[in-house]
Length: 127
Image 1 (cartoon, rainbow, N blue to C red):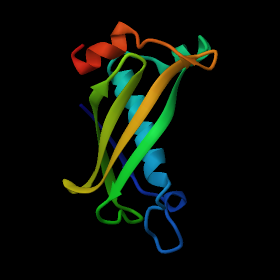
Image 2: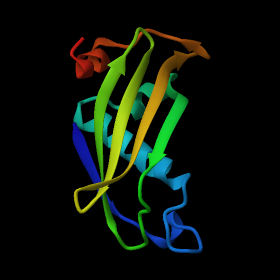
Image 3: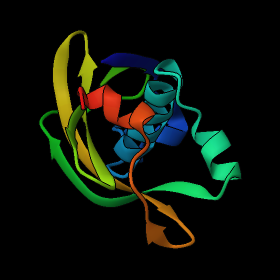
Image 4: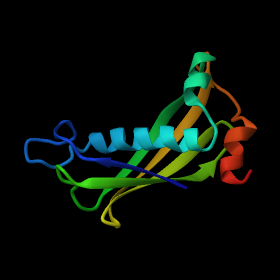
């Protein structure tokens, strides 16, 4: 598991100063990239090789709002792996209180076709 920390800025929020619902996914995307980088997997290098990690399903549970100026910690952990797909679980916390949880299922593709996950990714799941 890794943690990605950031402050909430104006461009993250709606007119009421609450994080806009779609921007929770932006926070998760940044945390996902850090998760892979900190585990030695360079998604940018894969992208340059024509291999993409594409999102196929998102489940988000909004428990309590996150507000402008708050510091949010996004904890990321690998929760499930299959032959060509993986699921990451995200907990978004403010002062150690879970404000939202997000599960994202992604598939690895090349030339618009699913490909088997490399061992470097599978090992994140103990496989």
